[in-house]
Image 1 (cartoon, helix red, strand yellow):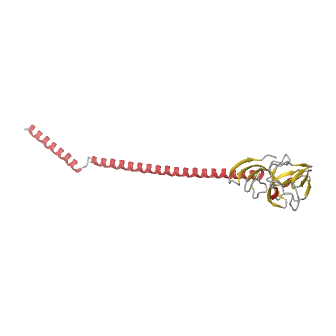
Image 2 (cartoon, rainbow, N blue to C red):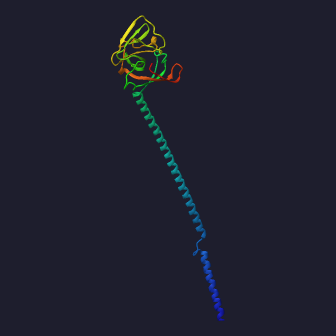
Image 3 (cartoon, rainbow, N blue to C red):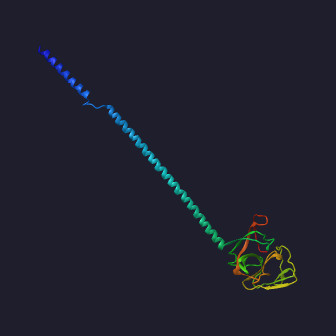
Length: 253
């Protein structure tokens, strides 16, 4: 009898205990919903991905901006480099044309057929630093009657020479010049002229003797001083008669 009661008591106790536990589970006191963790995990992962994408996008934007900035700097550097080269080239060209060579275009036919109208020439400014002009040289010089103009003629008489023009012929120190470069024979005007060339001066004529304003016809003097000589003509690089580039060296005749 006693054993039966004990069994029932224990059974009743166990039922109550189970009931309490079930009630606790139902009330949600001891356990948390695992779905809550999943939601938190998903949210955290999504936020992390979003943050990562944003960071990657920011890095990409910064990288693109940096590349564009670098490209602009490179372009500016290249432009400045070209400008520097052009300035240096311009300065060198200025120095060369001012002190080394002279570029001349001939507007008249006074030197035909050696030099024709609109021919372009290069003269060497330094030709007479260590030497003197010689007979037959073609020179560029300041026109004695108007130094704003430059003339091109051939040297005929040098310092101390006696130049005589008679019967359409030229004589230097009593000897007739053999001139195979003149366009045509000089017209004989029935007169004879004699010139004694002074020191540091030169008597010049055009190769087209019948159409040249040269030492025979100047008003202030009949001579070109060495100081007035700008250059010795070296070559022709443009043929004005045929309107095309050319290259023709001038040698003393």
